[in-house]
Length: 144
Image (tube, rainbow, N blue to C red; front, side, top):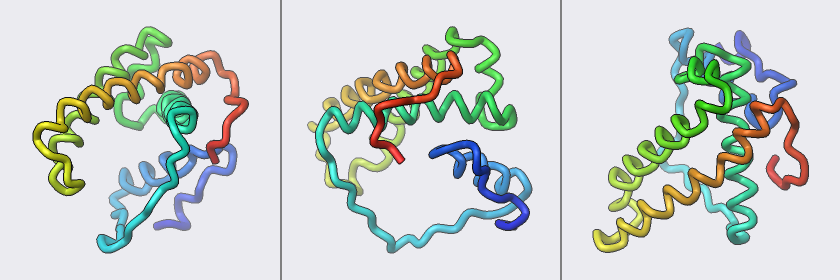
């Protein structure tokens, strides 16, 4: 199945989303090692802003390229779809916060801050979304 859906070589850092979505649509399964752990280095809010700008860019760029991705139809609205994407992503982040809090040791009284930060980081994706709609490439990024 993997060889039937090769990684697009011209989609940059977001090619994996296109590939994995095609595999799932064809009935394939994506398997993950549940014992695997990853630790990321965090270099502050500048790094978070760079990552989030790239995530926003990828959200729109992949949906402009592949109309079968979830909510790709929204991109027909152009930049007017950005608030809808932002609200949807924020709601999804809130659901993740509530679902995963106990697994990360987040206490009940810390949840309001986590939910507020979810709003902030999702808003940081908007500049990347605007760049994707203007068909410009992201420059000045450390994101790979």
